[in-house]
Length: 357
Ligand SMILES: Nc1ncnc2c1ncn2[C@@H]1O[C@H](COP(=O)(O)OP(=O)(O)OP(=O)(O)O)[C@@H](O)[C@H]1O
Ligand SMILES: [Mg+2]
Image (cartoon, rainbow, N blue to C red; front, side, top):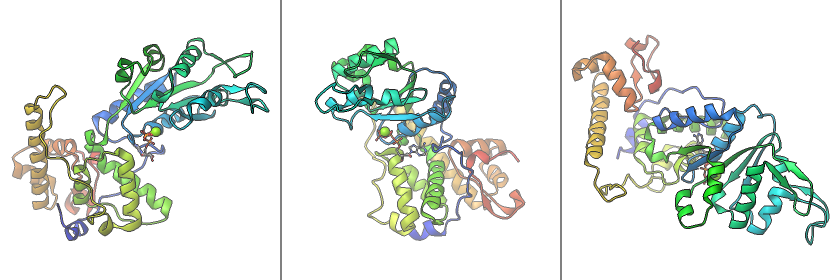
């Protein structure tokens, strides 16, 4: 692990432009695929199911889908199925008429009604019980619902987006979730990969979040150094983007010393030999990964040795300039452009800006 002095002495990364949305799509293949899918589906009233571990950004993606839909001027209504007790969730969703049950002193519209014309986001959908699953299935089949105690059928006119961090296939096998309901809600399924499977995104997410927190806390925490970013890329991030976000908040508030101190540091990537689901050791995959890691480190070293002059580094590595740019981009290396190459003083550019200039 790099020392704190090293981390401090590294030059900072250049600021990157931020998208206007509150979600940041990194350059990883996985996130490119997610963006492609949701962009195609956002404009049509088809149900979307978002799957992913806790903290991978399911809710921000649901809000993004709504923002990109033609009904973005209408409400986005979230129902956290895990947070509302089983007995209450039905009245929360469907609403009720006066006198429908003890305590129903006045009629109240449910969230389905509040979401009319907009998006209804059913978060933690796997948590609803069997009876509500059956009711929800009917609502989705007929696109109608009735308030509890009411007789008037109302047309459901909201896009449904559901999310869960559970493996729904397992829930179906154990009988905890209805397969017919799954087929209703998963017309478009989006898998948000865990952060450890999209480490290429980490430099960009970190920079995005740093800028967000600087604005929010009115701070001016400097951009992370290359070494610091590399350290972040080596972490496991079991809490995914939420954990990275908290780390950046600490960094902006407390500074580098604190977050890289023992208290703030996280466990390094586990060194245990990984196995596939069927217990095999994926030798080819591991060997490819090891080669990529070695290549990445070597390219950084050679770039450093040549003051980040990419042409000279390419010559030293005996590869073409274009190949170097390609490999640097693939490896997520944030390439520093020296004055001779950039023509406007020392600066660091983020990898998607690395071109064959
Ligand atoms: N791609 C992203 N860009 C910016 N911020 C993100 C991104 N993904 C997640 N976040 C941030 O990480 C935090 C967790 O995101 P979110 O609540 O959407 O995750 P989740 O998958 O719904 O988690 P949980 O399953 O625990 O509810 C939020 O504060 C969110 O703003
Ligand atoms: Mg969530």
